[in-house]
Image (cartoon, rainbow, N blue to C red; front, side, top):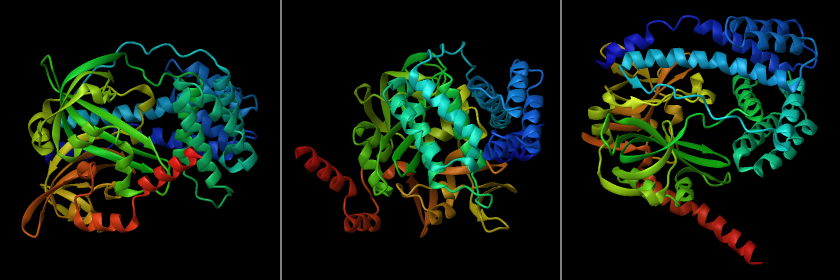
Amino acid sequence: MLAAQLTQLDDGAPAGLAEALAVVDGVDDSLTRGLARPGEPDVAAWAALAAAVDGTPLADRVAEAVRAATTGALTEDHLAVLAGARAALLGAVHDALLDRLDTALHRSRAPWPAAPSAAPGATPALAGARAWLHELTLAGWRGADHELLSGAAGPVEATLAEPAQRRLAVLLDGLAAELRAGLPVTAATPVPTRRWADLWTRAVLLAAGAATEATPAETVSGRLLPLGVDVHEHDTAFQAQLHALLEPAGGGPGRLVRVTVVAAKVATIVGPAGWRLLEAYPILLKALSERRAVTVTDLPAHGGDLHWVEERAVLGDPADPFATARVLLADATAPATPPLQRHPAALAEPVLVEGRVVRDDDGDPVVALDGRTIPLAVDRLPAAGPLTPALVNAATACLGLLRWDDDRWLLQPLAVRATVKRQTVEAHNGDWACGVTDPKVAKAEARSGDAVAVLRERAGRLLRR
């Protein structure tokens, strides 16, 4: 069955997808050069963006903003329009790919709700962020220097002081840090143009007042059945995003939902030690490590994203994620995607794939299904869990996320069932949420010491002085 579904995914890209991405590439290259002195390639790139949205409600405003950008008259308002047009084009690519995926998997999706909440009023913090982003756009990634990037400190501090703007503060800080780490950005320097342009787009839209929570708030109750956890590790943050199925307390079809918890950290905290930073969520961590259901009551939710509140959660019975996926996933309703998250790179749909892992012609691991194959994104395996490339290579079933990357569909493993030494074993990303269970890894962790405990002890000592 899944092999036939994969055929629908792989047989040709949606119409216009390559052309849309080519327009985005041209815009991203122009942002790399900067708009202080636009040249012929810049004029052509922005004209292509205006043509791409011609016939839409954005057409007139984008045409005006493009004229301003290519004649040296770019304002902060024009900047927001250009960022919006780029986001809309990538959003259209996202929607086309998601529609194809939903059709192939026969997955139902909740309709988009009413209009989003009103944008917040202008504040000095947002004004400072817009001014800095305007300067950065004129300079471009190659024209940025330490003086310009240090100018982000003021807007970051101002937006951090406003709880509603902290998402923008973190984004500005991260963009400035990545640009600073890449200095000097010369003509020979490889530049992650798509990534930096994505960060720029989101920052410009947030600074212009775009709503981050575009769906009405609600509360949900029911039984939460974990499917798998996607772990993100960064030098300054550790995040666990649980993909789960919610059985509503009042009955009705199950809902695909996400629960995200995150903690700040330093670069010396790596691997399984990151789970120690999430000790404020013991029920969630036990549910992951022991593979148990959770009963939740009046949990705040925005669309498919649940805001975790420990006091409103109670551990339930064991719940096998593979059984949950096999029995309930096909009939579950997926959430609508918020506007600011409509991007091909944000596609991450839970699926269960049962088939043996083999090697393709390039030696990369793929799941084989009746003559069809799905490439596996083994580069996304986190160091904080027991999944390893060797274990994935021995898998006979994989519970993971279908993603779109490098112009193809990939499967990111969250859990695998494999045959090791003639024994069937299971491994899930969240197995070490309450401590490492692999004796060899635990011994190595003990030898290297507990970085979290050491840092907490040193911080306490400083505070006592």
